[in-house]
Length: 184
Length: 273
Image 1 (cartoon, rainbow over the protein chains, first blue to last red):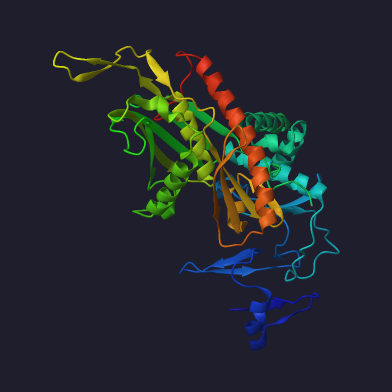
Image 2 (image 1 turned 180 degrees about the horizontal axis):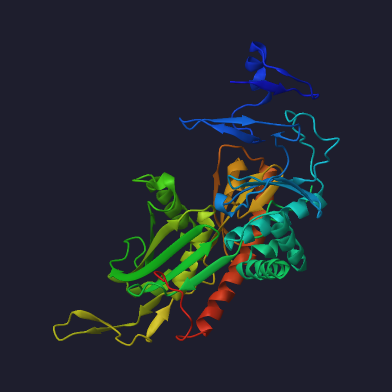
């Protein structure tokens, strides 16, 4: 059931029969999308809505799955981290890390995927963030933009692949915990 | 194109592994390895048997693999049997050559009695890259194996009698210097990746499993997957496999020596602990 459509190019209009039939050209089963849950029905089905152009199909990035209870409930789920990547912290425990989304230029309505190769500097940052998030999840720390950022900063002493070692994970999570506690 | 994977590793890096030997007390040798979500337990039992008629002066090694139903949902019921057969087949092939193990050393009385090493592998948890981890655990367990020394003498009635030494320290070891390890090289796009994670395994169309010794000898090759491989890719993957295999065998052997030096007072994590 389709209620209204954000078309590529940005126009918004009410649904028509033709729009419903053509939706599969834009979004097919198996695509990864970001959306908000508008309503949960009594039979367990959901209605999802993409309130603005920043929602939609996700293209280049890394998906991590953690326990939903580790994600802090916040008003915004999209964060542009100063280290050079964007992160989406879903309340369902799905975390998406991608190269920085440029708000003005890159919002084409969420149906078009940008599949250009990602620069190696960006990939390095994304890999490091991924390992930091997994370290926090391993130590059952709450995930929110500040905790992830502090862990990223604490990890700069180590090469990215060393962050997979348990002792290194424990070290950076410890530093993050101390820093968060000091701030109150 | 750059040599960075999703978790920051390069194409030839293994993930963090934890190894412990001598974890099961009623075996001749045992080892347990954990790599990411893959957990393997190997026990080796040495028993006397009649040698094969075409190899009267050699012992034998036999592999049995059991995939625990708890390892992964697809092993429910009898789902793990096919996978278990695959693992034991490739282990048998990798070890089936003159160089890997000194089988003549396992002979007690030619044509009459020899030692058979029964290697039991248990896949406790399956988190990808099972073949490599199984081969490392087998190598570690064989290194840990102690075979009691036997004296052969004739008893009063003229029959040959075998006397096993009671002394737990009077035993012989298995030399694992030339035993192979299995290195799985997966082809993802144009890259050849070692130790694929679960996501990487899902993207990979073709894999090559190589049995490599520390001396860079290839003892077995198996190609898996629905995709096809160019002969040039196969050559490149073999070279990668040899390089990685030689390094990982050397490191594994070094760690086994280090663990042994810790002596009987080392801190044990154990199997049920």
